[in-house]
Length: 531
Image (tube, rainbow, N blue to C red; front, side):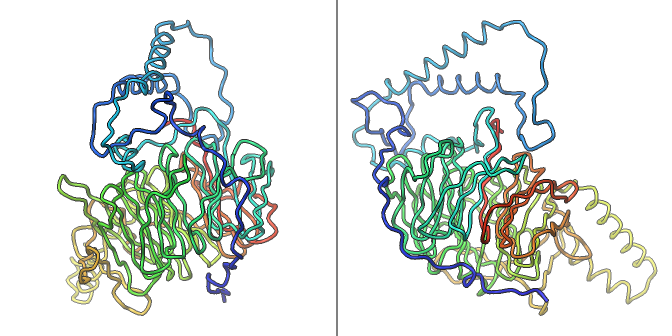
């Protein structure tokens, strides 16, 4: 029998951290380049025509034309780029790129001053960030892989060799979560009461900045796509938004229960959080309020949330091992959350749900010592074959004319993919329900229907199609991270190890050994070009 314990007991509380000598280090080097008379960023609440915007876009297009053949991930077998034959020098492209760079550099100088604009860096960033998701662009850089946990250390790994290249001590507390900025320059380390920001490229063991304000364990951390602001969640029932450039607190949202996780929607204008009371909430940063409140399961803690890179799907996991999936539909008038699937992924506590960058896979980590990878692709060949075979079986049973077979077929129809009602039950035969209600209104039950354009559902097990079960860890699997090409997954466990898995075969290709106690969080950034 699997020995399971309450994760609250497994997470050891730590003493309140003391202030670091580096708390007041300036972040001026992260601020936008502006002349002295415009040293304070100009803030806006409404769109304004900014001179130089075309120049910045021109520079971006020039960069894309140069790096258009760069591989998206360096964790695949083509680690070394092949030697290419020399090509004639294109002076037109070079001149074009240099001119675009000059125009982009002088653009801030010509930016008009608006004294009446509100002093809110988040609103300014919301205005200046395009609604379409822009994945991190880092150029051709090395893979950055870090792990941490209960031994009070943060370890940097050479992903391909498995060698630990750097260790940072974190004496204040255990480390709960890690997050790398999109440009790979900084690493955020979430511990007890605070978040520390480290230089990911230097050997400096001291944090560049410490974000103080939480009064409990920090459970989640995520960065704006340009790394200019950061969001954190905590067991103190709060979600906080920080200006990374100044270290100042910009937003403070409250839950009724401890918050277990928070993510940023790809539109960079919404936050999604899950709490111990069983609520998933969507926060609008522009209006600074909760716009959706979802209760996937009564009295069951939401342990993890994940949003698709294209903003199409939202996933949540509960402590009972259940997974819930919504389609996020945006119209001109409002955004709606349409429930499209729910199933039991694990029989034990579920620690993490994570959608892959290509939105074709869903990874789940559990106290049952495994991680599982589920398929979300409607064109997944095994899924199409299984659904076709199931429908053919139903047709044969109907043609036989047996009343018993007809009843069984009707029951199976209600659980298969299509427009019919999809009923999912827990082991006690209780119907799992999902709700989508505005805050502070009476909760109403929502009909759960299978969507023809949704992920394929296994007609036998009534789950997503299971691609592989990663069974190699000896204790709880806490966290995971996909590679940029969605072909690899890194997992960390209480057995002290991190492992790199090849998902096509389900095999371990690297094991990272060095932690002396449980490893509970991992961060991976191997992006080498914009997507």
